[in-house]
Length: 70
Image 1 (tube, one colour):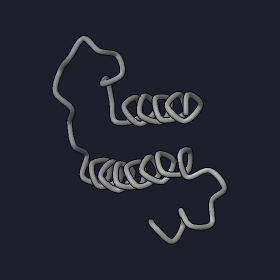
Image 2 (tube, one colour):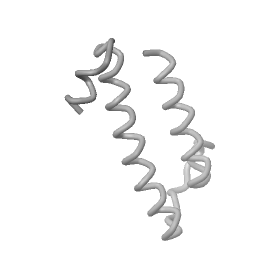
Image 3 (cartoon, helix red, strand yellow):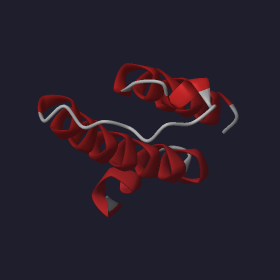
Image 4 (cartoon, helix red, strand yellow):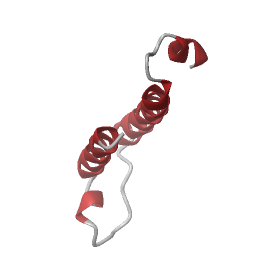
């Protein structure tokens, strides 16, 4: 990560973007495993957790919102 920061004009912005990218990629890997093994989510009233697809959409929207606020 540090080599990527050396070439950035704004390290203040670049650092959280790199952290976000790392965590989103990690989530994507776990989500793909859950989808492949047909993991069932616990029952909840939160519509964002109705299915793995809804959960993915929720995380992607939240990630987008986080990036636009940096």
